[in-house]
Image (cartoon, rainbow, N blue to C red; front, top):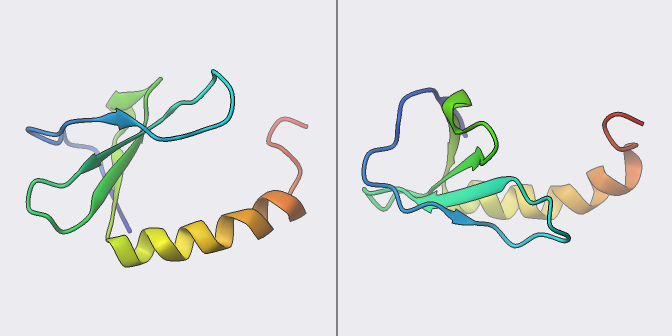
Length: 75
């Protein structure tokens, strides 16, 4: 995964599925087909992360255990 602070030209951002109304993650397919970009919709100027499908699959498998083990930020 890589962090970019430049605008992603031509991206069609959509809200990722989430629980509740406070979803702040958006995703967009990369124009070159190499993967996806993720960003915080409440601060899109902060940049985005680009990841391949394989990297996102790995992240998806890791997240449940991280969320169970770690307290919520701000707790």
